[in-house]
Amino acid sequence: MALVNECFLKLSNNYLFSDIAKKVSAYKEAHPQAEIIRLGIGDVTRPLPMASIEAMHKAVDEMACGATFRGYGPEHGYGFLINTIIKNDYEPRGVQLDECEVFISDGSKSDVGNIGDILGLSNTIGVTDPIYPVYIDSNAMCGRAGEIHDGKWSNITYMPSVMENGFVPQIPDHKMDIVYLCYPNNPTGTVISRSELEKWVQYALKYDAIIMYDAAYEAYIQNPDIPHSIYEIKDAKRVAIEFRSFSKTAGFTGVRCGYTVVPKELTAAKANGERVALNALWNRRQCTKFNGTSYITQRGAEAIYTPEGKAQVRETIDYYMGNAKIMMDGLVSMGYQVFGGENAPYLWVKTPDGLSSWEFFEKLLNEANVVGTPGVGFGPSGEGYIRLTAFGNRENCQAAMARIKKL
Ligand SMILES: *Cc1c(COP(=O)(O)O)cnc(C)c1O
Image 1: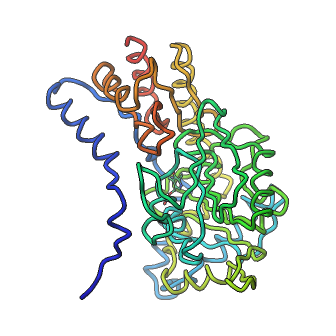
Image 2: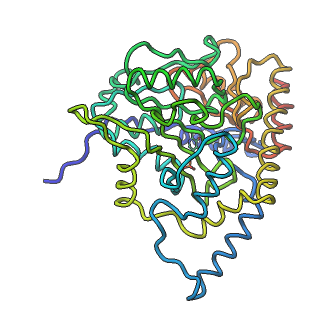
Image 3: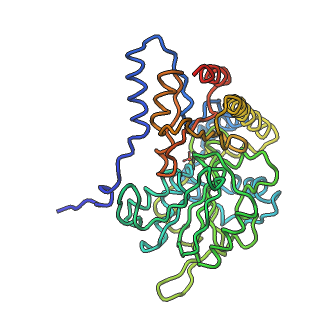
C-alpha cells in the first residue's frame, strides 16, 4: 500500500489568489462596464531588457550549429555567469566569493523551497510575520513545521512585523535553528538597516542558527545605507545562505533564473556535534535533483550585467519605483498610513477605520474598482493591511489614485 506524505494534508489550501479572482470576476459579471485596475499582482509587466533578448537570440543560434551546440551544462551553472555575478553583485560591496559558492538555479522559489533537504527535520524555525508563504509551507511539507493550531504551526516562531514596532520584528531571546529573513520585504515593502541585520548575524552566531536571507528585491533599494547582501555584515558567511533572483530585477519571472550563495565557511552540526559544510551538501543535492538552468537563459542573465543591460534594468526599476512614488504620495495625501514603497515595489497600506483586510479589499473593489491583496493572506500579522504593487503601468497607477481619492 503506497502511503501519502500526510504532511501535505495539514497544509491549508492557499485560497488567497483564487478567492481574489473569484470576487473580481463576480464583480465584473454584475458590473460589465466597470474597468478594474489590478494593483494586486506580484508579477512584473515590463518586457525583458533588450540586452538579454539579444544574448538569448545569439545563444539560440549557437544551439543550431554542431560546433557551438551545448547539451547538459554544469549543474551549478556556467562559470561565465557565476563569475559575472561575483564581480558585479558582490565585489563592489566588499564581498569576495569563490566560484563554488554560487549556485545558479531556475529561480529562487525552487531554492528557497528545496534548501530544507540538507537540514535536519528537528530544527526549529523562525519567520517574520507577515511573510512570503513558501518558507512556511515548504517546512510544513516535510513535517518540520509541526502541527497547525489556529493558523500557526507549533514548530515555528512568528515574529510580528507591524506598524507598532516600525516593522522591525523583535529578535527573540530563545533559540531558533533556522530563521528566514526577506529584505526588502514581500509583502510589506520595508527594509532592514545594517545595524538591525548585524543583530541577526550576532543572534545566529550565538545560537548556532542559520539565516535564510531572501534578497529577491535588492535591486529596488534606493537608500545607499541599506545593505543589499547579508554578507556585507561581518561573519555572516558563517551563518547565512543568500537567495537572489533575476525575476523582479530583470523581468525573468517567465524565463526563470536565480542563484543561491552557500559559503564554504557555513556549517551545521551532526547529532554528535561534528561540523559539516553545507556547501558540499547543497552541491550534492543539486547534482542529484537538478540538471541546470538552460544555457540560453544563463546567457540572457549574463547580459543584464553589460553596460547596456545595466542601463535597461535600471530604467525598468525606475519605472516601477516611479509608480510606487505616485501611489505613495497619493495615498499619504489622502491620509492613509502607508509603509514600504521607497526601497521596494510594494506598498503596505493600513486599512482605514479599523476595517479588516478583506473588508477594505471589498471596499476598494466595489467603490473604486481597484484590486489589492488582503494582507492577512500573508500571515496573521498581516490582518488590517492591504498590499498594493507598483508592477502595473503608470496610467493605471494614476487612475487608481484618482478613484481612491473619491472614496
Ligand atoms: C518573487 C519572489 C522570489 C523570486 O521567485 P523566483 O522563483 O525567482 O521567480 C523570491 N522571494 C520572494 C519573497 C519573492 O517575492
